[in-house]
Structures are given as C-alpha cells and as structure tokens.
Length: 235
Image (cartoon, rainbow, N blue to C red; front, side, top):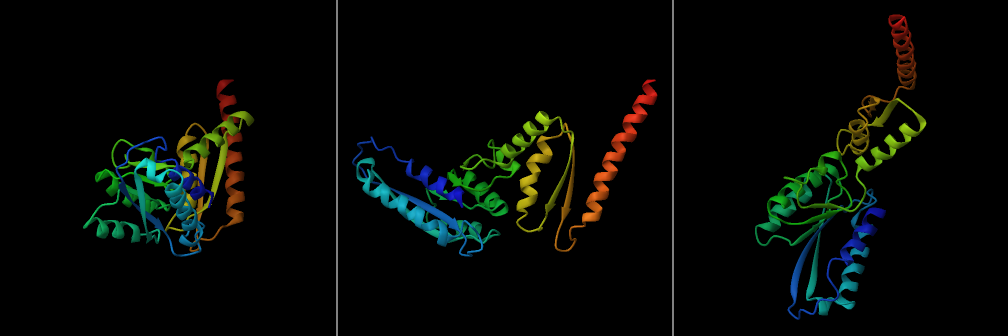
C-alpha cells in the first residue's frame, strides 16, 4: 500500500543528520503489521521497506545522530492483537515509538493507550473522522495519509462547482472493520448543507438495485413536489 511507502519516508526523516551528539540512544520501535497477506499493508509487503529505512539510518548518519532504532514487529489482526501485544510488552518496557496499526478499530484502542502513556504513534491508517480530535485520547497520533474528511472536502468542492444538491451514498457495511462506512462517514458529516442519504448493504442484506432506483425516483419526486408546493404558497 502506498500508505506505508510514505510512512517509511517519514521514518527516515525522524533523526536530524546534523546532530553531533556522540551519545548513542536506543529508540525502541514497535511495528504492528498483519501476517495475513489479504491486507495490502501486510508484514510481507511492508516490512522490507521498514528494514530498508532502518539500514539507511544506520549507514547514512546513524552514528553521527546518536540514534539507534531497534525494531520489533508484532502481528496485527485488525481486531485486538495489537492492543494485547502492546499491553504485554509494556509490562517490561514501553516502546518509544509505535508504527501502525492501520485498521480503524484496532488503531483506536492502541492510540488511546499510547496517548495515555505519552508514546507517539505514526500510522498510514486511522483515517476516520473521530481521529481528528487531538486534544485528548488521540493526542499522540500522527497520520501520514489524507483523512476521509479531506476526501469529503473534495466532494464538497465538486458539488459546489456543479451546483449539485443531493447524493445517495451506497456502501457495503461489513459490520467488522467497516472500511466503507468510515470512508463515507466524513462525506456524510461534512456535507450537512446538502441532502445526503446513506444506503448501506451487507452480505446479510444484499444490494437491491431496484430499491436504489426507487430511492432516486422518490427523492426526485419529493423535490418536484416541494418545489411546486413552494410556488403555490408563494403565489
């Protein structure tokens, strides 16, 4: 995933190469990546880039900067694995930096705990609207990818440009990771001045195209009816 290529670029920029401190400081980095290769950000796909960043830091100024990054990978199942591993590991020594997790629910739990412990978290995920609150529980979170609210701003600009007023948001809600739900959440909340109607479907409740077409027809019909009613009252 392009998310983590950007993550590694950020990771490379952490130390200051002009520092002359001769004291070596160990930075313990805890990385959460799923072993499951069905994820684009799995361990197999992402870990080589992180190892490459670690090696570059070591050869391109690691000694002069005084930092030595020690990386430990842990499995992330996008449910609870990352949180449990963080708690278990912190019974001995807490990490200095956390990379990941990406999935929304798992990231929420990890970031809340990390913020309480003053541990910075850098992730390519956690893009849902709720993570924008940096005043309390997500204070130590840095996201390196545009959040879903940024996508909503694009939609808003497009609607204003074309003078659109209504939209039907059709999305699959898997009830587990809920990626599509969180993606459109930002659009729904940011575009409060427009008529936005969500239309979820799932494996248990499959997509009904006839119902979608009826929704569109009803919406247009109501718009015409309301318009005519307004004209009549105005006259």
